[in-house]
Length: 192
Picture 1: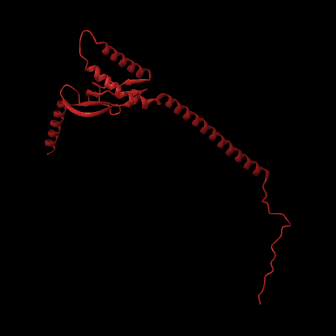
Picture 2: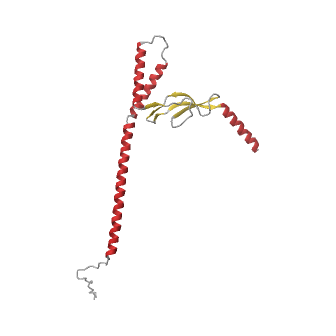
Picture 3: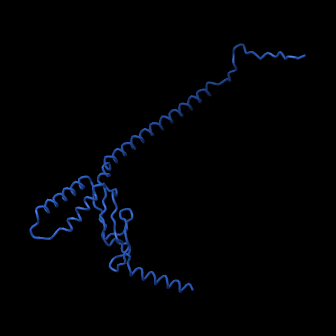
């Protein structure tokens, strides 16, 4: 036969065991909780301030650079105007259509200026990859090594930010290249 254990669970008469906490310990726990909540609130406030600053900066950038796509699309038209004006005949009495053409060109330039578009000054400057796009390197005794010899296509900036880099031809100084070759061959002979 089966034997059953008749063990009754201990009864507490409806009372659960509560660990005894002193008033000082309770105060310390409340102070600690208060400091944590205060710290969390300060972080949340700082996050809100940072978010507002980021949103304001993004809004300013949008206002400043929002029309850059349109301006980039207008640049080839400006290039075509520049090329056409470079090809105009030099006569003492300008044709009326040519004057109208120049007027349109000036208006387009003034529109670009009013929007904060400036031309990148490249010719004669040192090559800067952030503003220039090198199409070729050409040997030259008249220019320093890495100096922009000529501009193939003008580059433009919008409020200091590059819209389109200037396409340039960069000088490779033949004197510097020859002296470098001589120095390298001399140092190789010395090492041998």
